[in-house]
Every structure is written in C-alpha cells, then in structure tokens.
Image (cartoon, rainbow, N blue to C red; front, side):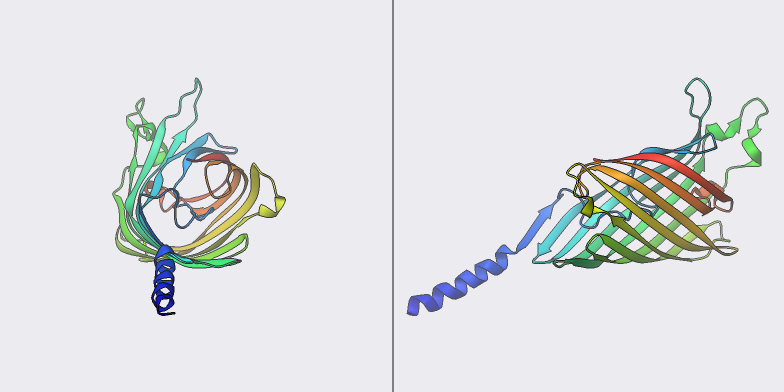
Length: 274
C-alpha cells in the first residue's frame, strides 16, 4: 500500500511531462497561412487574365521553435518573402517591372479541441519595394507609363486572431505601421476574412477550397482591397502538395511602387507547398 502512494503520483507526473513536446526547427507551421491574405508565404506564379502580366512569388515562413503542451501550442519563427511583377513578351521574355521584399519574425499561439481551434499570430516585419529594369524603356531613356522610382518602406506589427470550426476558419487582423514612407499612407490597416477547405469531399489526393480577404487601408482616404480565391489543393490538405487557383483582386495595388494605383483583375495561378 505504501508503495502505491509513491508510484501513482510518479506515474501522474510522468504523464503530465509526456504531454509537453519541445522542438527546434519543426516540420510545417503551427498556424497554416491564411489562404486569401496576400502577405503569406507562397512559392509559385499567377497569370493575369486579359493582361500581359505575371506575378512570381518566392517566399517562405518557418517555425524556429515550437512547444506543444496538451491541446495548446506556441511557436516562434521567421519570414522571408519576395513578390515580383513581370511583363509577358514574345520569345518567352518576362521583363521584371517591380519587386517587393519582406522579412521579419513571427510568433503564434493555438488551442486545438475536438471540432475547433483558435489562437493568433503576431508579426513584426519590414517591407521595401523597388522598380526594376523591366519598367525602364531604353529606347526613350525613360520609365514606362510615366512611373518613376519612389522610396517605399514600412515596418509594422500585425496581430491576426482566428477561430476555426471544423473546415471553416475565420480571422480578423489589425496592422499598425510603426514607420512608413510615403507619409500619405495611414498607420492602421484593418482586415477580415475566411478560408474553407472542403474536406468532406473525402478524396485522398485533392481538396477544393474557397477563401476571401478584405483589407481596409488609408491612402489619403480609406479604401478597401478585396481578394477572392477558389482552387484545388493536390496532395495533403495541410501538408506538402500544390494548388491550382483562380483569384479575383480589386483595390489598391499590392506592390509598393504602385501603392496608390487602383487595380482590378482576375488571375490563374499555381502555388507549391514544399
């Protein structure tokens, strides 16, 4: 009897510690990227329909450290993004018009239950944007379409809480620009959206999805950006594979050099989840 008073507490203590898992450089991300949010890691390209434009995304987000304790998990990691706009020309030429760079750090916290999960992601990042030689017309020794290089730079804090019930995930976002150039850009960005993976299709190799993101920004006056996307993920829904997606965008340009230009277009793209 005396032995049991010692063994039972030790077993309970061992079980409690067994639920805690710490790992450096784990596989995957603690929080899956928000599908329609533009500032997410992507590795692919998209063609703008009706225009000779192409966007090439080469970016990654990695968790450096992750701790799991029962149904809760915490992670800390980093982001390195590039978003490039190219122009399609004959003979398979794609002059690069502009490129945006993002780098920074992120942290996330998540609680997972049987049918739902919730948490948040916090980022601190820097973005800069640059016109490239594809925007320069050498024959007239001037920039195309009257565009000229500007200084575009911002450092920001982004908080993105989310709630997921079964296959539907909703989120809101608040971004505060610690520093921004040009100065006619407001300090706050307000955001909301959702993504929905149709896992009820019960296919072992693909899953359809839809997603929407709305972002309210101030460039002089407040203006809304809309991104709607619908596609099919081939591979593992929350792991490796690739996606084929249709997207519609309306609002101010996602590229910093054209930050005050209104754009509206549809695109078809492929994204790799490596």
